[in-house]
Amino acid sequence: MAAASFLLSPRVTLPLRRGSRLLVSCSATSPSSSSDAAGGVGFQGRVGFLGLGIMGAPMASNLIKAGCDITVWNRTKSKCDPLLSLGAKFESSPARVASSCDVTFAMLADPESAFEVACGANGAVEGMAAGKGYVDVSIIFVLLVCRRYVDVSTVDDATSKLIGKRITSTGASFLEAPVSGSKKPAEDGLLIFLTAGDESLYKRVAPLLDVMGKSRFYLGDVGNGAAMKLVVNMVMGSMMVSFAEGLLLSEKVGLDPNTVVEVISQGAINAPMFSLKGPSMVKAAYPTAFPLKHQQKDLRLALALAESVSQPIPTAAAANELYKVAKSLGLADQDFSAVIEALKAKVQSSRH
Image (tube, rainbow, N blue to C red):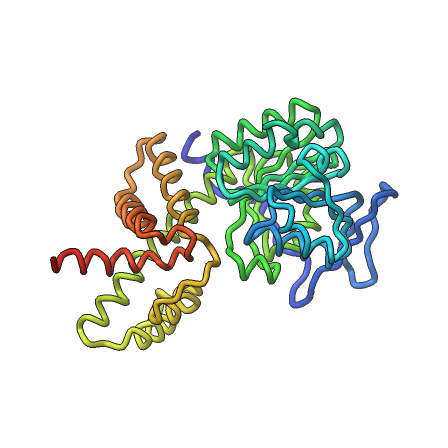
């Protein structure tokens, strides 16, 4: 893929609402568009959602609260129960969700899961047909079956292209839509969608994306959304390592790391991540918003992407090694900010 293909398309679409939840009219009957009294944009059809983990559950919940007709599936059925209590329907396989919905979203944790849910036995492909859509939002992916499938996961671009090819071979439409954001933005409907693929499907599901996120970007061909997500997460993972180094160094030289967090928050290098994660890192607490194993996975995929275009990324490569150490310490399911514990472990080992 040429480097130029990673540049943002001039078609950058911001959300249609500010300060209040966008109301979406979701109807399974009339094909005509509609708007509610609050100025919401109508979406006509049934919506499927595959994958109800840390990200998928709040995303699907926001759609239900906005009035959408939602059908869900998850490998562990008990994870569907909170959404069923809100009014969602349940189907026993991705294929059944896809066949019963107009648009299906998929939010899975890795390329293997994304491919299996879409293309494996009883996968979404078996329920797709002309007129449906699949949206993969995995960080993962989301399926849109309207005969449309939207993927919102973070997977490598080769996997995304393969899933897209299988989906479109059924006559359905495919959109990859990996998200930038973690648990809290997902809960608050403040995710950033990085979409690529079928532009007509993008326009059709825009009202749904606006319920779940604060902004959305259309990036052109399938693969560009996954590539953009990997670049963003590569930067985020490297920043977290540098931040962890700063906190530990400040403590070693007699500074209060809490003051370091405050000073950083007032300067040009301020980032919401530092203010959000810093106080708990100082307390050695790592409530999971974005699992460390997923951050390491994205760094690994970013390294592979860089290798494919002969682009050196030495900082990210070094950061990846530290996340691997953190995983070996049993921190895979902790928040990615727990990478600071790998630095502490290095200090301890050097003393022996």
